[in-house]
Length: 400
Image 1 (cartoon, rainbow, N blue to C red):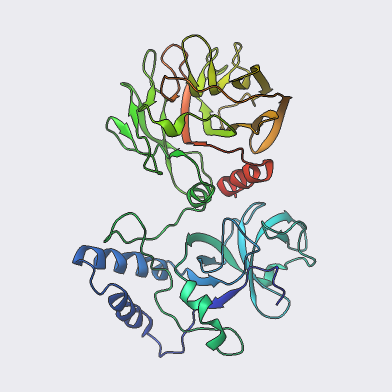
Image 2 (cartoon, rainbow, N blue to C red):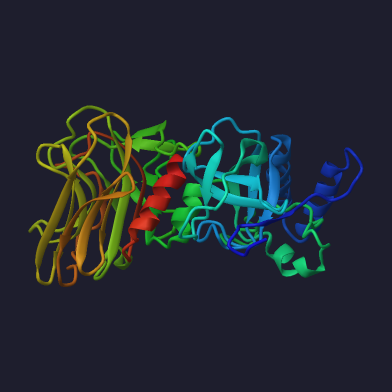
């Protein structure tokens, strides 16, 4: 099997019919030795649920789907999917009877053209529908690393017998155990944002920061539990609060970016056009000095990226589709160019110089005097400029 393919060890132990659940419970109990009872029950539920759904766990053993999927990760594959589209991540039988997981780049009459995210070109052969094993529905980072490390001791086919392949201990507490079942969420976290707000709260006065840096204070009138932006998974969003409310982070040094940056959010207008100068993500002072800002134009028809550097102020704008659908909006500054993105694609670029100026006021989503008319989801800020390829990859993760 060529090293450019994201190949797998199949976790199919030879066992008597009906023994799978008992074997799995035994393995979970072994892994959970020393953990609390609550953690053990969580492990049992999270381990057995995918089997009940008929999903198949596979350990990834190469890096062609990096950085989203890495060697040692476990993917959970749903057999016989009926919703494979461009952008879907699928597992199929490769040329030498091994299993390969790549992303669908094109759907043809003969099957699927595929490509690994880390590969520069598409795969050389079309995947026929009969060779499709299933669509990847979930990702569990790292937990297959032991299987990758000992693969040399497996049989010649590379098949192993490790049970409970989709159990993971997460680094958010000594007894916090769980799995990750969201490709988009994992892709964002792995890209290293400073802050990442999923905005899937069902109520309350704060919105959690996945990175643990700065939860948002939620203004009065915010709408919760709205249908979210991601087609690839179930998630919720919020409706921006009305004038004069907003969503505001605390004052944290990490949000003061004196260098390259990326700001990104998903937005869905609830009526058209969007409010004049409606702000999406903003770090700006009352004098107009802008560390970074993603905001709509005065007519509400375009999205603008803005920054004030040590040499001047820069702005670039691009039209936004005039519909009531979700759109991914982003801005990047890489030290020489300010770019604005719509739905994963560069929609405008302006050249510039200097270093972005930091400002005292905290970061906000929406804004009291310039509120969004609609819903917002999956907002994040990075202290680096994501490449166009990285932003497109995030868009495909959300829509695949």
